[in-house]
Image (tube, rainbow, N blue to C red; front, side, top):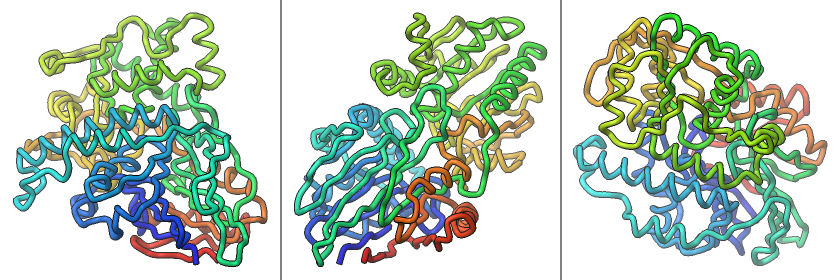
Length: 462
């Protein structure tokens, strides 16, 4: 009997997405991501997969975020040798993500930041090269026959460049065909750069994310106005805004909005803008290469000769030396990774500026429990970064309207398109309160008892 086992992004854990679809004849892994957040959650990366990687026939990769692709090198190291299906943009972004993650992983091991028992690397650069050699590019909307009666189709998930939901058709032991949909991470409609998520009609089983299953995002216009007020405060008080950005999508979203504000002359006076992330700069070049995935707003800018991610006053910071020179910056916006302040250059900027009452820390994306970003967002006045205790006197903001995740309204709209065909909905990739809120909403509006799987739990598809 066909079954799905949830090896990540379950039991209230948002990260580590990894779901094994087993039809008895075919074993497909949907994503193979890194666990991020608290020390307890991060330790899961060192506890094995729970299955034999050499028995996996294929990986269906939904998108390039680290919590969806970060353990692919480890999967290869332990015997996986099948195809990795994904869009072309996901392939190119995954390459950047994996090499950057390896660099950080190597530094953490060498500096002993992973604990006294961790003295060797989990994988090597050769494993990353093997991962990249296994990619098989597939297109949105086209049907693909895999093997033993399994076929699939990618749909645009509207989350980041190249992100996909998977429709998978399998054969039961009785010869009937069943359809299971894995949402991946879904985006909110109306984003400036990325197209809206595709709406899928009919499925027997749906595995859907629930990151914001109990929340509603502010509308984009309200968020942009709040962002503008922060920028005007910088004009007035000669302050600095520190923005922890995710290199993929969020950095480009912020650059896009700043481009509109600057080139339309909306700011009172000139500010300096710094993208202090070589990785985000490289990702931005990938975004510029794949304009075929843009929505109407971004395409219209291009038609007018406006590069969406470049504008007067913007500098792409390359070297560590240049980064250190931002210590005394004023009238400036500094964007740097990582997005949850779990590493990278952003930590140094927080150390250098967060003690100033004229400074702003602007969160534009989800903060995993246990991360430094989450601690600051929850009101902690002292946090430890790179072994130093940092006083947080800066004003702290959370601009949820920039989120690349669907909120409860968006998730429900996406789910309602399946109509009455759904036999079971599984909620993953969400903290327990968010999963529970979405499950309650699904029951009220769709009369379905959505299921919230535990980590390592197996469910059968009848």
